[in-house]
Length: 295
Image 1 (cartoon, rainbow, N blue to C red):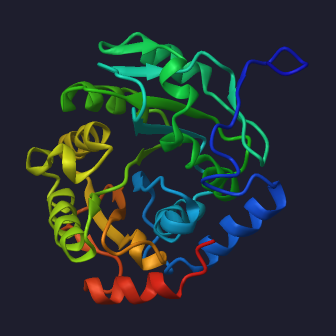
Image 2 (image 1 turned 45 degrees about the vertical axis):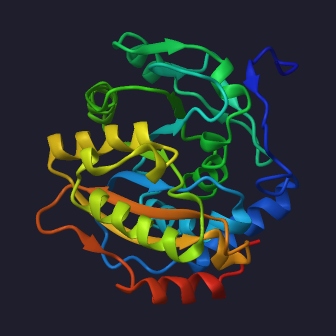
């Protein structure tokens, strides 16, 4: 709790997953966004999928998603951020009771109105424990602050073992409000060798582009539950899905024998086939991420 009585969740991974110094963090996020591939269109995002590893590893891929959101600064007025429960066993979805999440860039407010609506839905509880040490949501906040500004509120939602229709109901309920977008935080495959991970992640990307949550398995993405819920929502609303980038931790200098995969996706209203919003080859993705100054 701050001195003014506002209840704030303190940052849990500042200085580890991203710089704890505000100037260094702002400079890093801005540099990652500046190097993101330019948008080929100006369709308003309904949702993004972005990774949540240390910025040294997944920052360039996350920036590929947030660069699209930055185009809508001033129009986006609320963000629903969904991520997995890495540390706390959880059935259903947990919302925080606090009024803000702290970051080195300053606090970002929690949307109390959205929390009140979501808390009335099936499968949703208010519980701070799943949020306390969770990095999946926290790592999205510096990107949100630098793209949309620190005044745009968020609703953090930790998603445990939850059926896709239940997650989709939360999304459909909250995303109907004007100016609201969703972010699903997930990495892809874990601890495979580089070649195997690339094959696995490209198969996962194909399932996401097809909006086929039933084709996904828990080993495909740590955010399996929120991701499948988002895909169910995408089917319900007939959203188009675009792939913006794929990479692995090896592309940023990690051990190629044991990598983590990262993907960025954009969901929006429209017609047409799912698309790939960057050069359509794993080699091109690898070359681009190798050149990025990711930390």
